[in-house]
Image (cartoon, rainbow, N blue to C red; front, side, top):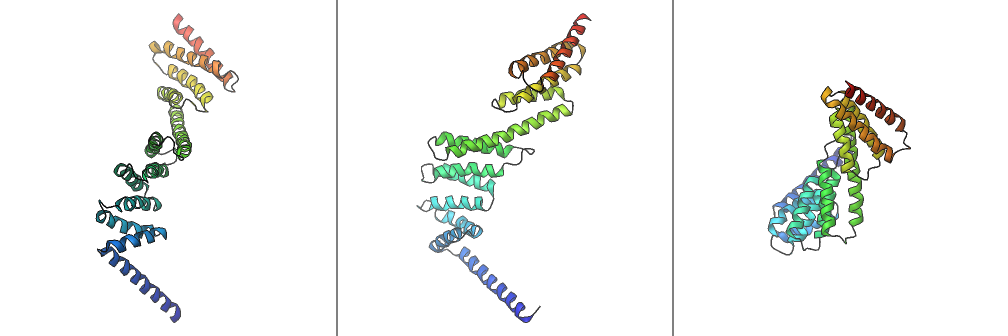
Length: 268
């Protein structure tokens, strides 16, 4: 390493240390006016961590003043920009509850939902944050039915519900693969109830026939007639709605086999 490079590195460390010391002195200062000014300078410069530290200090200092609303609002935003979405959702919601009539109340309630949207994971994982995001958007829509953000809320609710549907469908398929036919039947049926506009109705109704039939096969003799009849009943609904389905032939074969088994059991 040359002397010139070493000198530049040392100079950089010294300047960095001076900048850090200067910021720490600012944090320790009781100069509310300076902290307030610098906090928003850092925020506008997208130095969100520094802005957050100063805004956090200011919350207690400007409480019950006209500056409190702005400080708290931008403090919530620093968490959002730093991808601390659990905190940003909390602080945006707290802001909304504290300043329900403030000029930023609508945006805060929306951003609380947006934070949970950012936390929503892929469909294979637990969907608690997805549920919270949907609840947040629905609360916003109910609170501000004329908002320009309403179309965004509806779009994201549809997106998140599709994720929940995909999760539920994979769960039902998993039950079937593992031969838990009663649970599969219940899950496929719940899909039609919980997601009445699903594009997978044809497949779900087909799987209801299959899972009901398999459940009947695995049942004790005293329950088989009733459960084979359930498979036949599901076929009738399938035929009514999806007579042109590619699954129809297989579904019809299952129905015919179920009827034969019912007759045999009744004769015995």
